[in-house]
Length: 169
Image 1 (cartoon, rainbow, N blue to C red):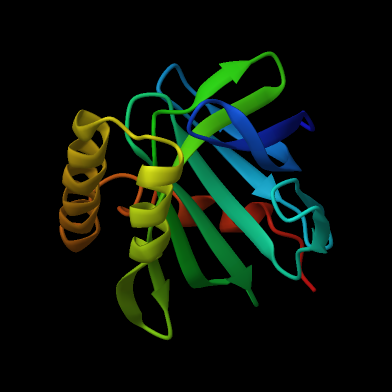
Image 2 (image 1 turned 45 degrees about the horizontal axis):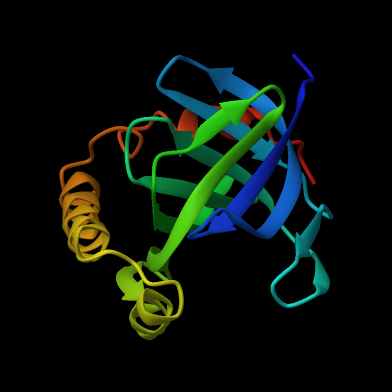
């Protein structure tokens, strides 16, 4: 199953923010897991730069839930989680896109933390987020924290089972 999937992160208003290519690992009606290869190019349109990603990632995009997960895999283990709060992802052919709402929940060095709250506040003004969207994003962040704490999908080992797809280095 070597199917390329392009991932597109959008800003509110469906403005292309950044994109990268991945390989499909698992797809259901509710979500998709993809493998991000080490050395892939991330085209960051907002910053007008191209970044080379230094680790393999297993990534989760939900068509129902308001978050994504990217797990950095190093030496056969998850070394970092990066979760975006976003509107549910959409799939169109070989492209998965989501509207990034700036708030991020990350696990690094064994600790979970919320980042980019300042970016959320400034973009809420810049992109004129409706009050209902601001409220929903904050609620979804709290729900994500609870999901992680309770080891609920995809933090129940569902993401980790795909580590076998990462080539040995």
